[in-house]
Image 1 (tube, rainbow, N blue to C red):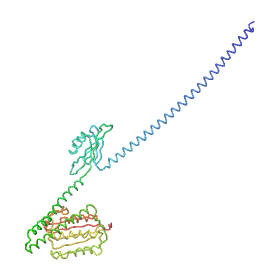
Image 2 (image 1 turned 90 degrees about the vertical axis):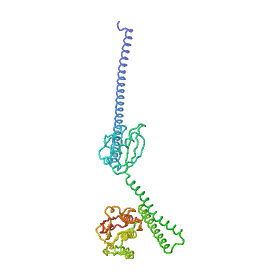
Image 3 (image 1 turned 30 degrees about the vertical axis):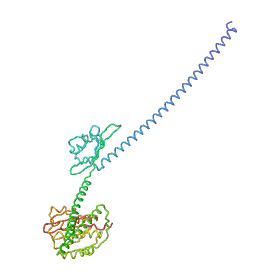
Image 4 (image 1 turned 180 degrees about the vertical axis):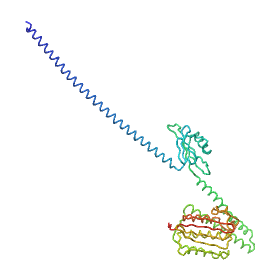
Length: 410
């Protein structure tokens, strides 16, 4: 029969193997599906993670880029402000010698905008053109003094290196006109002072030698020479004293303490000290002032001011009338010291306050003055935050006008 025992076993075995195969196929499909699902999930996870990391990185890069750009904008703004308000002319050249940066101070100095110009452009003033050319080829730090339009500048040029490669140079010009003028004034003052001191010293030395060599000199001659030595020593003392006063004023070492003083009282006191001198010179005085006028001045300094002006009238003006008029405005107490003497020539008026300046033969050394009185007077007035003016006409007289601020206690 077809379904015998052998065939039955064979069929069962075949069915079992088929079932096992089907089950294996089913489970493999399930495993494959699970594996595929797990792989897909894993791929998606890593994809999302990668995108998250990349997005975070891009955000950081963008943030860093924005911060860098903001910093660059801030630095550029700071640089623009520095270039705009930096008081000294400044200019920057690249390695090719072209201008890449400059400020308004330099434009005002050269009278044109220097953008994109070369270091040797002929539009630059000759001293600047020579300076830039030397700095460009020298490629090392240099300091040079130049003169432009009656102004003196100290030029500092610095080469710029990046990774040891020359990238251009920077030049900064500092105005030193005041320093140069002060130095010249100081040299002139030293020369003038030496000359002024030499005169009485030479006179004292000469007369002393004469007295020593002539022991049997007539008594009247001896007294005359002795008086000359005394007079020259007084003049020498006056010069040294005035020089010390000027030194203290220039170094702000002389204290000016302003206090309320009655103008009438303090000027009357000063005039009283000159009573004998006025009589000897035949000089009459006229004084006008309100009893209530108050001045806020340093008494000793004010006395020095008035003493110098009155002495100047006595020695140099050949006047017979001295007028002192005190007026008040809302801001100032104004004092006018006027004489009817021979006056001062117009060309000398701008220099009457200069040290050791002599306007005419009447201001020769024989007068005995130090040549510093009016300069000291102006210095004292300026120390009070005031001002002084002078007007004069030949054979008509001279007027010194003083302006002292009111209510400025210090």
